Amino acid sequence: MLESDGVGDAEWSKLSNWAVVYFSFRSLRQIVTNAYALAPILIATLRADSLWVPALLLSAGLLVIVGHSWLVVRRFEYQWSGSGLIVKHGIFQRAQLDLEFSRIQNVAVLRPFYFKPLGLVSLAIESAGSSEEEVTLAALDDALAEPLRQRIAQARSEAQGLHPEPDTPAAPLLIERSFRDLVLHGLSSNQAWLVLAGLLGVYSQVPQSLKIGAESILALMPESVLESTGAQIFLVGLLLSAIGLILMLGLSVLASLFIYANFQLHRVPEGFTVGHGALSRRELTVRQRRIQSVVVQQNWIARYFCRFNVKFEQISHGQGGADGEQKLLVPAVTMTQSQSLVESALDFSQASLEAESYGRVSALYLRKRLYWLALMFLITVPVTVMNFSQWVLLVPSTVLAWLGWAAYRGWQILGVAVHQDHLILRSGLIGRSYVVVPLSKVQRVKTTQTPLMRRRRVAHLRLALASRVVTLPYLPVQTAQQLADYALYLVEARPKSWM
Image (tube, rainbow, N blue to C red; front, side, top):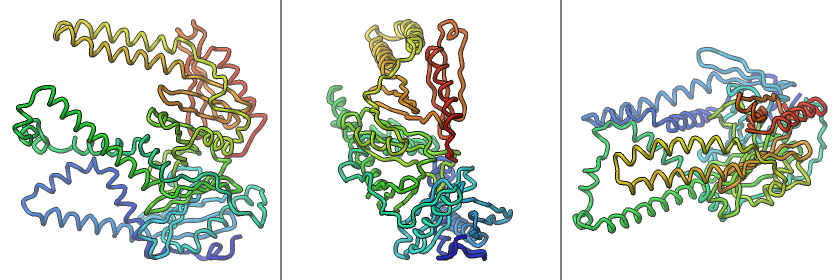
């Protein structure tokens, strides 16, 4: 049984009163995340004749959030046992959660900016079950958090029959990200575009009477602009678009610097420990045995910088906003670094993602897409000719031609390779994406065929893991059957505990 540092107390323990601050901020974050749904209510409140109405409603909302958080903290009790952690929680309906050490998936130390002056942290313990089985011990003393995490790791190893060395050397540093790396990640990521999409979602909820119309925009422009030629207006629009693009890229870079500042990935005996964050720092421990697949992604901007994002995918149970749940993502690494990370996570040695011999899928994959594009072209041509000038036909023709090239390029890049016990799925258009899957961790194999595919002797192969479903489309039937048999053979011949 765990015995010291308050870890193995036989009595029930309660959270500090400062935990109310943590749960209040978490509730506010969830409300802001779903602000698009609350936009009509907020706008209707702001339209009131007096400012007292929105002020009172805002104060009442804050009081409800703080009151709810206080009740959550007061009704939260936990106790450490020899096999795990026992938690009692619930305001009106009490529930007890028994979280065994062997089922703990990740342990994250959260260091919010508002706890730094107080020397407090929060410990998020995530299990392999549902999102309801995550426990957050908020407002713990900083001196207790790290020993507590180490004790959990030790007890977890002992529960699985492992006996770690008593004198463990310092965790070696695998990789860290510099300021330049994070800038490149910000330029090649979609952080700002996601923010813009959220703002557009909020704007769509605004009443029609408050939306800015074209007449209002024209009224704001100087008369000299309205008297300009079409070419001058086009150049002004192009300049404004460029300024908007620069602002969006700047926001994306700031988001990358804010989220991934001081990024460090360490190798520990049971897996990896990653820490990052500018104001609020997050330190997450990921067990190697629970890593189900590794994704190496590169979009078209990242391809210009020759960088990739590497994501370690774990057992997924759809807990979108949980505190402990976080995809271990290593931003803006080179292909050599990506290869090294894949080898460390999956024991994937003596292989190169770029140099592997990938088998191409059937041409039926491409043909199906070209048929649909041809049908769209045949429908678009008469409609355009009947309603517009003939030169307007160049617009849909150019778009369909680009889509045809994209379909052909995607078919060329799409490929499957098997290296030892691992399957690699390559995809992309301009950039590249690699999904590396240990076949011994496949949970379910499914082969599907349509009547047309049966005549062409091709099939879809779906490999279901605890983290994702990998679909290999339009494989030759013999290849699909061989891959399915090999995966099932590895599951039976080399059973590895990864729960």
